[in-house]
Image (cartoon, rainbow, N blue to C red):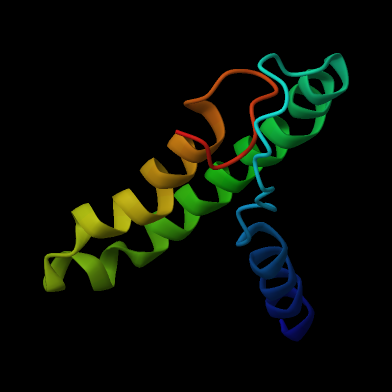
Amino acid sequence: MKRMITIFMVLFLVFSFNGLLFADDGSSAKPSTKDILGDLLCIRPLGSIEIAFNSLFFALSLPVAVPLKKTKEAEKFLIKDPYHFYFDRGLGEPLGRR
């Protein structure tokens, strides 16, 4: 049981970060092929995994969120915000840009 809790804690810490944010220097209008491939092969799959785990955590938080009437906030924080962060931008665009 301790090992399972440890594994869940490590997974939570690994997937709770939203990635690195890079400063935008504005030097290039189009993203490079390297940026697009990195985004497609690395960032977006990790974002999908994070959203899947966040959905699990959202389901686990419902017994607490429903009596407190905080389901909308929990849904926005755990599911909608990460979705918009990872998937509401073009391929290769810097993370965090809206």
